[in-house]
Length: 369
Image (cartoon, rainbow, N blue to C red; front, top):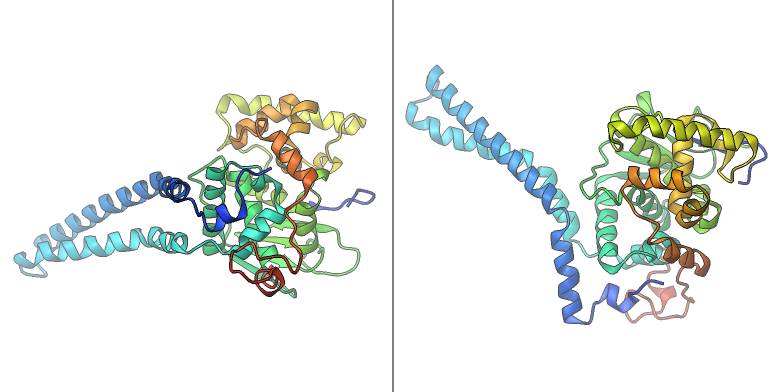
């Protein structure tokens, strides 16, 4: 959970035509090849497990049919094939659904949000951007994002998905099994989920009856991406909690992402850094002092928004977060900093729409963004 404490402060190498239309056939084939390579390990594993399970189910059905003699023996093999086929179909349902999602073209209005709002995306290499887009498609295709007393527009949906993708971009096989729905509130809220003046909660990961759900305050979600220099981003914060929860507990120690021998050094480092914050000798958001879970989420915001600054000011902390998230942002830090300073790609209302439709931006994707 992220709350606002009293007194606290609230060059990409690929062009639009290349991204959306890819006029160079060789370049297009290269991007297509990259797309085909993504998630193949996961697909092979799902198909392999489904096939083995189907064979076992079929054999059991045949054995049961012969032993119990509810059907003539000559019907047992077809029955086994039928049971195995049904089992395989059920086991690969999610895989088929994902393939249908990824078979759809990436919407140009989503691309406009990525290019305008997300320095992390703009700093990626072209092949990495292909992967990022696919993961955005999967998240938006498999998870519900619901506006509560607020209109849910393209920007809020894509920024929510980007908040999920950025922390796990180093885990190609990651599956967001911990979340099924994200609720977007029009303003900050209280811990009992009520809205009104004076409430300070920006985001929350649900527990108990709300398990599998997340709440984000829309103004703070947008501000997190539009002011990337402040090292604060509620979307990244809350999804970092879910990375922490990958071992079953939100406690600031993502043991599923850390080798056993690294757990003690990480705990010691957290305590030392928290003491620095208490003494006023740190630029880390003091909200990190709440507990170890909040320390992990707060420093994750810092890591993804200003990796170069963290690497320079907190090299040990940077190295540990790089190890946890399996993302070497040091090499990308300069590009991210340049994108933060440059801001997103801007389009005038009368500019040609970047989707390549030939219409003016105001008559095309601007309405969707």
